[in-house]
Length: 603
Image (tube, rainbow, N blue to C red; front, side):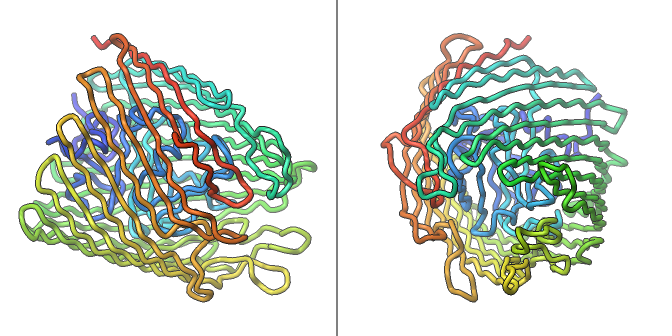
């Protein structure tokens, strides 16, 4: 008995065969992605700018800090307010941190109150795969996907494994997992924790400075199951995390869980479907600011796919209900308790006509709080020669106002919400040229422009009420190159961007205009691997002036000391550079990780 071959949820099986981003250019096994179009396609055939971080990449990085992985990706800038576990902001292609749609196994997880996602709350030990799609995807996914989409897939391992780790700043952790697969069913469970003393997150120029260490404790649990029911497959998954964070103004707690159940399969040889029901909840308790935020979200998606020769048509419906609550931490009284519903219908068509590929997408969202948004996207590619491809695309995006922007009472009458806000909107274009002369070598150049209107800012009159006032234009270019040279594997990329406020002419805060990264890995036989990473940034504008550019050098090593046992090490900031990502906050000096992994022998 086998699972349906056309199902998106079969990614749990397919991703086990996926190869590393470092080595995908060096293998004949095609990389399959699903986030860009909500349907399966190979990475080489995707018309969007897509990067994949696999489980092998995570293991080779020898870290449990997501920032170590994401900072190397083209178009991504991360700013963290201190060390491991502290608040992190991610900017994709120069857009705002709330312009990135974040999904875990297809479930939206950003806070409906603040609009952002707590990246520091994501445990790397639970992740099988990350797909990064650059550029607007509202015609496929709806709100938030102005800068792009990042989808995280949790692990679906088969077997037993365990890891213990230690890192700088008295950081210790452990994780363990079990999974089992048979013909027709599978299940798994994974737990983990990461506890560290950290370092002082703020410097003396920061608000409420206190010269002590600011640590964190992250605990997490996940589970999954799947069952074959004839030509259909039922599945269920859950991820729960709890992060306790120390900061100079006190201790905060972020709790999050996301779960889903689904049914997918084939109706006929040309017709498949996928139904998913999901629930997500996030609680953010911040005693220092006398408040607690609560987000609850239910969602349902039903997608049908028709294969028509060399064409595919997708038709889908989506429903989502969000509740956001702001609670006074002392009295327990709700400052606001609001909800809204969103209904959507969407369609996607793609076709492969020999030297030409086409994609057309459209989506209508009808929201009870801010009205309707209709978004479209079109993409075209031309195979110029056997190794060369040119592509062009245009797409729209939007971001719904979050509950704080709509309803927050403010502080003493200042920075209050505005229930009359409209959604932020965007229009983007992109041109790309790809060169792929062999399975071991590839290069890509992408040029893009993204115009964003109705940006929300607290600038309304004397009380700084939230209003739609700002406009931004982001121009950029991304260049990437990868190659396998015998036992060496090289991945490099460079990003130039100009994220600019149209009215003031200033660059947007905390986003560098230039960035470059390089990863070089070497295998010595079957048991030893080592790597070098380097990343460099230009200066960036902050609230109190410009922050200097900087470069970092990191080393990694893995050694299979015995069958089933692997010892791994990582050194970050090897040259001990002093740098600043956000004014008023410290960054780490030279630091390291040490991991010992065990995996049970397979029968």
